[in-house]
Each structure stands twice: as structure tokens, then as C-alpha cells.
Length: 244
Image 1 (tube, one colour):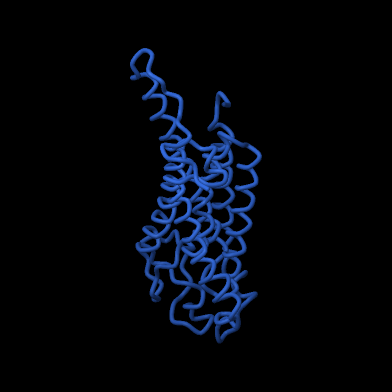
Image 2 (tube, rainbow, N blue to C red):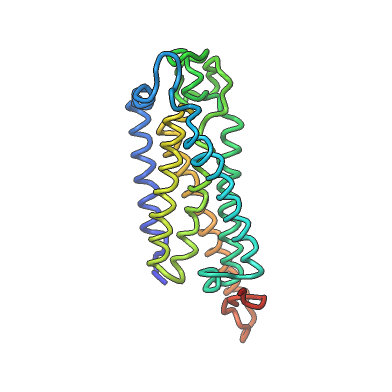
């Protein structure tokens, strides 16, 4: 393993944070929203493909995949067979933790969705999601993008997979980012979110996965230091018979 496994991810995390803060400072969120809207709302808000396929079906598929990964803790399948038991647990926990993190922030957010704005036929006024405590006159609860987390929640899998297959980890990372962006753009076209909402969701999920991976490494080092002489600390690939 790399002597400094967190160096590059940390640089990426901080660099992405700076870019996100810079994007927020431009105020272009509203300008982008206007590209797919009219003074009477968003024409694609009820589009069948965006609503049923890229929203409802995508969310359902995400939960099905997560259920399969949770089941894979006991009955490993595919690439999961190459992961130790505690690594399979880490993968499942990372996904769930990412979804929970995004959901908790959304419940405390005063930011309303673009389709709630007065300029698009709603009742709210535009207020930056960083204006904490400032009400915009709408229902709020729109920051960050919850739906995009159906894909971005899997970003933490990169940290788990890179231990056994760097190539698979990179492929996983690119695939998750692409799917997440597609889901985010779909919601933006409907007026459900701004671009920054999607980007912040990706960053939050990435940081969640990164943090859990750091904790995993700390726990592993502690386990090694406190192990009794001669104790076998090699990770077991499975505590159960391999899956079909």
C-alpha cells in the first residue's frame, strides 16, 4: 500500500472545496436555472423520462444495489469476494452514512428549490444556501441535492476498492461521478436543484467516504499495536461460504 494513502485524496478534497466555494461566489446558480425555466415555471418539471426513469427508477435501483451490497457482507459476490469482511462492512456503512449525512443537512436547510422562486412563478426569493438562518419565504429543505446522493453515496467505494484493485477503484469513481452528474442535471432541468446543490452533494459524500476510510486505517493500526504476539491479523476474505 502507498506509504501516504491519504495524500492525493486530501489534495483532491481541498481543491474541490476551493472550486465549490469559488462557484458559489459567482452567483451563477440562478443564471443556469433560468436556461431551463420560464416566468411560469420549468417546462420539464413533469417530464416522464426525467420523473420516472431518472428520478423514481434511479432511486429504486440505488436501494436495490445497496441491499445487494449489504447482503454481500454475508454472501460475497463479484468484486466483493476480493474484499475482507470488514472492508465489505466499510463499503455498506459508507454508502448509508453518505445518504444520512446529505439527508440531515437537507432537513435543516432553509434553501428552497428553484421551482419555488418568485421569478419562476413561485413564492420564494433567491437566497444563497450559505445565508444560514435567513428564510427565503419558501418551504426550504432543498440543499444539498438529495436525489443525486442516490449515486454519489457510492463514492466512498473508491477508498475500499483501491486496496485490492486500483483500476477497478478508478473505474468505480468515474462511473459514480458520471451517474451522479446525470441525476443532478436531470433534477436541475426540472427545477428541483441548482448546480451547486449537486456538486456539494458529491463533495459531502466524498468527504464522508474519506473520513470513514481514515477511521478504518486508524482502527487497523490500533489493532496491530494491541495485538498479542503471534496473533494472525491478516484479513479474512469471508466469514461465510462464497456466494454463487
